[in-house]
Length: 347
Ligand SMILES: NC(=O)c1ccc[n+]([C@@H]2O[C@H](COP(=O)([O-])OP(=O)(O)OC[C@H]3O[C@@H](n4cnc5c(N)ncnc54)[C@H](OP(=O)(O)O)[C@@H]3O)[C@@H](O)[C@H]2O)c1
Image (cartoon, rainbow, N blue to C red; front, side, top):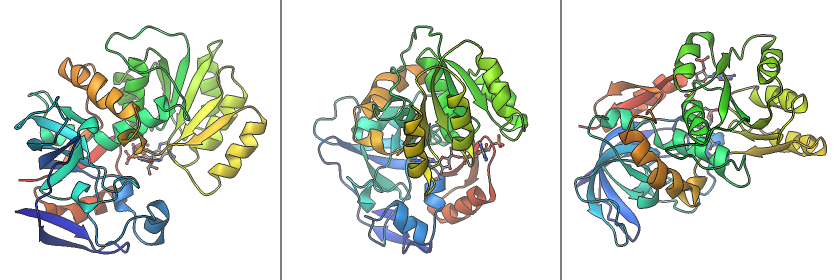
């Protein structure tokens, strides 16, 4: 049997219910979930939830980030075996999947093999669970052809002269973006709150600026010097405004991928285009169905995790031990986190 935490309506009430155990179709695996991380998307309630995912019917099972053991392997999945410890992107809220059997908030979940990665013995389930959506969103922004379209990461990257700017690098998406951009060979400039500068440098950023400083834009332009900007990942409120200023005053590709789409992003993108700046909105679920998903989750991540070159960050903060603790985990996320990911262990 399977137990799931059902989201009854967009208003945000949950109920624990016995639910049939999902099965694995072609290209899928079933994972016995051992840890779930929560994301801002899971914490949305009210009309905004219908605006962000209008295709979802309620009740449903939400959640994207899982780690656990493979208990069923579908036809065509050759890289994963029964008993493998994995992390996976649960894609149930994606328009093309749109099914509760693929929502993370349950004991057994169906995950697409293309966005599922074996985890090394030394990485706990709680730590591994911090990765899937943050990694997928950063990958979408950096590598999808309609976003920054940068070269993919490799285990032995060529060193490039160009710079990637990650605005909001202490976020979950940003921690992944810094590491991925470095693994593609770029130098990284970043912003974060002052207390997280050392953390962001430890991920590989050359220099970190406080996004709250009045002269942050000037500081970044100074640090760029003669180097070209390969692109900017803009995360966090106000990030697009600053990223546009920097793009206007620097040389390079003038592409900005925004993970903080607000209602006026499209209008600003149209205006920016007249100035030769390409602004795009990231959709973190894109790699679940694009070639970028397997390029990252299958080709890059397993080795990079194994040899420690890619670190599952930000730091997990475990706030519970069962599905019943997820609503409190969402409240903890709403209260705000800093360079941390709220995780619930599933015993
Ligand atoms: N488009 C998509 O598909 C997609 C997918 C995932 C997430 N997102 C969005 O991306 C954003 C980040 O999500 P997340 O889960 O990575 O966040 P998170 O880890 O929960 O974010 C917490 C961090 O936000 C930083 N922060 C707060 N205000 C900021 C600002 N104005 N500028 C830069 N950084 C700021 C804080 O930095 P300090 O503590 O260092 O000050 C803190 O470390 C959210 O807006 C989320 O909704 C979008």
